[in-house]
Length: 95
Image (cartoon, rainbow, N blue to C red; front, top):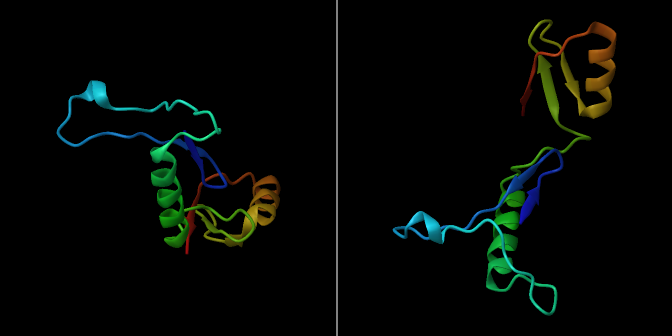
C-alpha cells in the first residue's frame, strides 16, 4: 500500500510491536469487494491524521528559499522559473 503526499510516494508498513520481523507486512491481499480489510481503515486514519497536521507538500502554495541568493519563492511555477533563470538548485522549504 502506498501513501501519496502530492510530491512523492511512501510505502505503508504494518508491524506488531514485540513480534518477530517475519510478521511485518508491506503487502496486503485485496479482498472480494476490492478492499484490504481492517488495515484499510488504519491507513485511512493515518492519511487523515497527516492531512490534519499538514504533513504534505502543496505544490501550488509551498514556499522555498534558495540557499545561494536567499530569495523566497512560492509554488512550483515560481520555483521552476527561478531555477531556469539562475541555475540555482540549492533550496529549502519553509513555512
